[in-house]
Image (cartoon, rainbow, N blue to C red; front, side, top):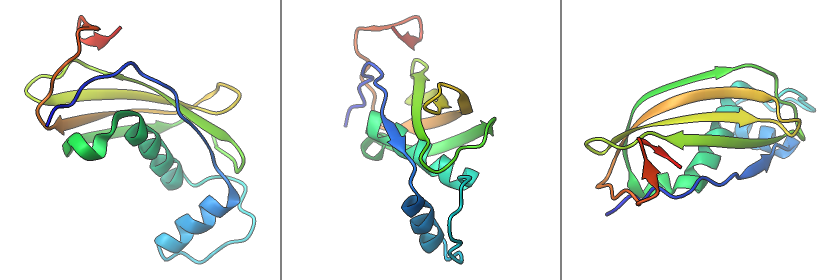
Length: 133
């Protein structure tokens, strides 16, 4: 199994009221009508989903060694979230993924790093000096 680093692309996701309700259902929380601010737990799942779709992590991820995330600004229902990311040059199938999440006004709402253990890695030729070019 090979993990190839592709040029980053931005995937955007709008958060709807139904997303909040599904989140509450999955975690056995009592539904609260008309929540306007998105809980940071849900925002973390949205960011993870965007990164997973961008990088196909489900196929190559063996373990998450470390996660750090900081939230800077409240995200609201109907905000659109996009994630910009960079992957350090993998060493021994371990890499560092750095990301920033933005709202539709291009304000950074969160950022973080994930240290990941991946399956066998093949790096494309466009990787230079440890980062995607």
